[in-house]
Length: 180
Image 1 (tube, helix red, strand yellow):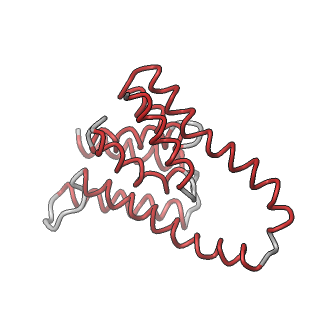
Image 2: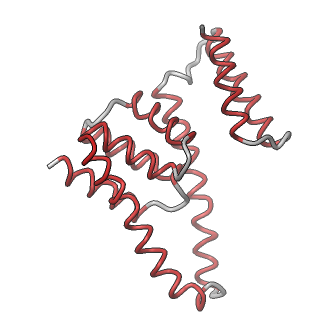
């Protein structure tokens, strides 16, 4: 039963999520908490590992969650579930997109989806911050240091245009220095 739930969850997630893996996180988080496969904190850690690992974050997340819920077979079923919709959709869309990509209705649809994808990514970030007690109203060393790491990371990515890998490594080292 768990294997079917994993496949169904990730198959549906793969079909209804637009904007990449980060946009899928709220849907994955809802399913994970609904089925009780892992805790919100563990999901956050898995998403962090999936984001730093090579490959698409959605597939990496599905594999980690599937493995946690049902071992190797869960990882395989989850991977197939999350990847199959993309394969089906890409082949189908590729067949029609060449003819339709200049259609005004299609262009307007994509303009409508862009803000949705951005909001899903921001929603996922806020949910993770809340689940890990990173957002609170009190002022403490930890909350100030979180804001500092966030601000410096954003500055390095946007203004200095650093490679995200370097920002991840430096943020991790900063975390070791501040929280050891």
